[in-house]
Image (cartoon, rainbow, N blue to C red; front, side, top):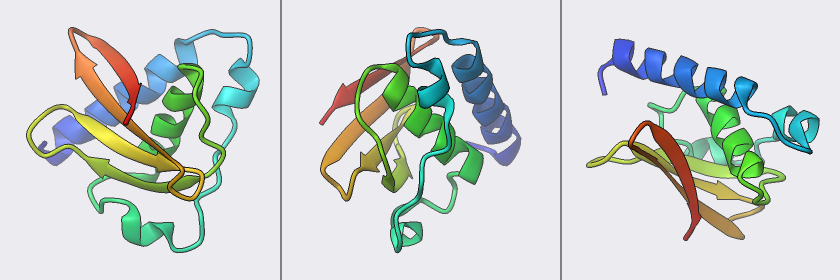
Length: 105
């Protein structure tokens, strides 16, 4: 994605997460710690705010992401791969039909 599109995309993702409601909204919106050394596993095109938004999205979908091990933007589709809890969990986040889906890989 171009930088302007990416910035708009990241802001839209963060806005979506802020609007989303759930029983554990406060916990879902809390900042997720990035694991030591994870900077090497976070795609340089993924902004810090996006990494946090992706972890929140994972939790809002009912999955665990207590710490961030890595995040990579998809090359050929609209989405991301997020690694959580010392690489114990891998999530595929994809944008389809105006909605974001989270699946466990």
